[in-house]
Image (cartoon, rainbow, N blue to C red):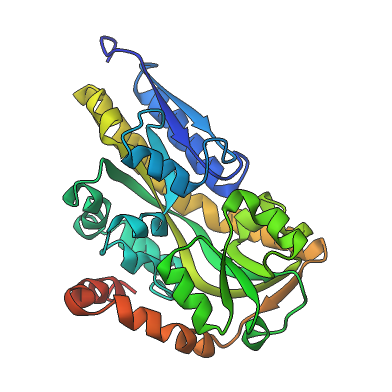
Length: 311
């Protein structure tokens, strides 16, 4: 590897570097740089300085080579024609963290999902899965349960799955970019939103929307992608390094995120955030059933069942 050319890969992350998922980026960076003997440098651009996930993806799909690697929520690919990957974004696909990691570590099945962009001719490939914890709704005004969300303007990122979920709750999907969400909550553009607990805290949403209901409607599954342009400029040795670092970061994520998230939740409660437990998720599942049935059917029904069989 001493003969490999030096290459710098720009890694886009919309969340702060000290967020839970930011630590995963750092783990990937450190391992890739170590294994490559210094021939690979990972330049993490965190805090959304390169734009939202969709901004980054739009740029990559348009052929830009300014960004080489990006951590994205799996639903960020929904608007680019993926179908298999949509299954990971459906409400209540994963009933527990263990269920998700059984899928992410399943070998061929997980690889089928990571490879889907390549099958579709998109200029990216997935290199590993991760998760940010279950996603929960949070609101400006106090709530006690699912019925209180009716009529609210809930922020979405213009994703059809999230639109269907919010509509199923009797609320109004309201498109607000992630970078404008804090101000949107503080000015009344939206009444609430949803994020994993770590992102809720690291982006200070608890300051403007201090009511958090632990509905866990979707696991915050993520994947890290690398562009075809970046992959092509790596030597075979360096490609192997990237995949080894990816496997390391995936394992780091699995071992780290749950405990880190619990610490954040404990801190939020101590700070006075109104945390509402959900003891019966049946009404939530029923509200989401139309959107689940719409996407987990037809040619994808068998694939969806394979995921369910990993519980």
